[in-house]
Image (tube, rainbow, N blue to C red; front, side, top):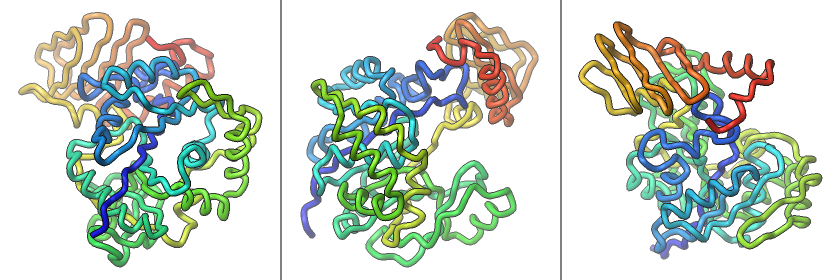
Length: 360
């Protein structure tokens, strides 16, 4: 068996994470918060690829406004050589990944990861990476399919086809977020996995497919990087050129259109921590099913997620609530309804309220 080459992690950190308002704000989104451990989500993501025998220093594609805090957080966990590509505007994942691919060597193996996911079983993840790397070297684009444990309607799914290598299958098709009945059918079929949004491919393979299927994105990224301002490990793509890029995800722009797309199914304790309900499910709970963080008093209370980064919160005689308090905002809603946070965010946007933007 040929020796596997070192991999370049590409960490996408441009999201605003408003589904976890009021703790997550545009000024300090969820990937820069400590939600599931002492480390932040970004730090945990970077640490998964900290083995110098298998990975080189990462490329982080991020919002330019977060440059200082990202540098500080990476240095805190011993990752001080990361390259930061700082987007002048958000143009979704296809363009963000193109910036990283253009910076990397053409034959570099790029492991593209969102900065705000949980992976409990890192060893399983690394085994899946090694399995996928074998086909990626042959010109395939690979993604990682999360073994589903429930008929989740909040994720896209991947239908797996024939096995093309040990632990790797051809992607039969990508499917959109389903309704409940459709999701139950996917689970029963046994060949569907969740689309976790993690990818592995050669830089030149990705750019070739992007130019074939989304040439306007490829052209904008090339122009932006050709005219980029470079300050040490900080790269600032040209704002005018990058603004011309269409706003499309890698799934729509490339993965759903390319012919040689593979998936490595993996069970690795994955979550995108996309809601307060998801965080409650991940958290350590007391005997009454409550997950606490901060200065909390709970009496005759059960099934609640209660977090405070500011005032003391006293919950008495309540159950199945989400209660989130910061120094300048409080959110209260029933557990199971945390996707409704978007209604509060939309109202804040309409009013131009500062609590949506600033770091609390």
